[in-house]
Image 1: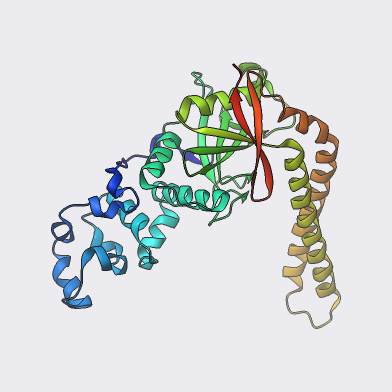
Image 2: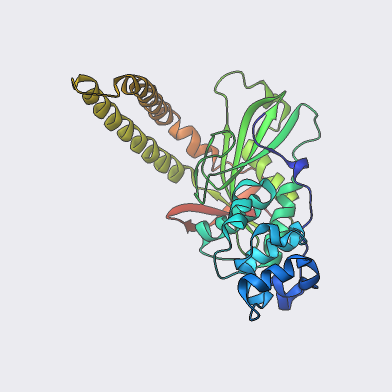
Length: 332
């Protein structure tokens, strides 16, 4: 099974007093002691004018070995400068650090906001403790987009996500459903994808409530207490996805055309590579064509699916990155 096991996300993040909420580094105590034997090296490298709270962004990860997971996250969140490259690498490769970075990225990409430290802590805790159903045949894995992408192919499973994050639902070790979402500041969640991962053999559906969108909204209400939620507009989602697929098809067609040209050139030094690459792009072109045809056939069903929220109702429209989302309200 691909993706991050939620149980593997060990380590705690801790909230701070309101006065430190925008700069939690100020809540870290005994920084000189935590530098330990590196204090002398730091002063030697950076001079007697080194002040930890002003200059810590220059320090390498090995110099911050005395700081906890929580404290390293506080340091990075508080810095207005890009931190030393070994810190950046940590937040790009270690899952629990990367999730913190992706929450910040999600807040900016989808809402142009930074949020606060305490909001970030709350989102992280809710993600890692998210529960699905009390059934051992189901398991959740977490995945997210690569780099700082607001949507696109995910890092671990290469699933196309319509938001930054996704819970991959596995049934008897098989990926059967993708629940895509993005986190915004002020405790807001965009529910952007409730999609079956298999077109046939959906026996798992009989183990879940019939209205899957209502079920998923209920899961978020249970796991993200105090949040407000919005659901993607189905018509808007279809239009965006078709545009993405057509752009992918166009790129694949251009690549095939270029590679065919390489094959007919008598002076081509990379003919074997061109042959292999052409085969891959031909397959990709066929996949995009099939996806476009399938999506056109499923258009009305998808639009209807994202309107049928069961006991919830759709409220005010809101635009995020030009895409329409509907606020979710509980029927009174």
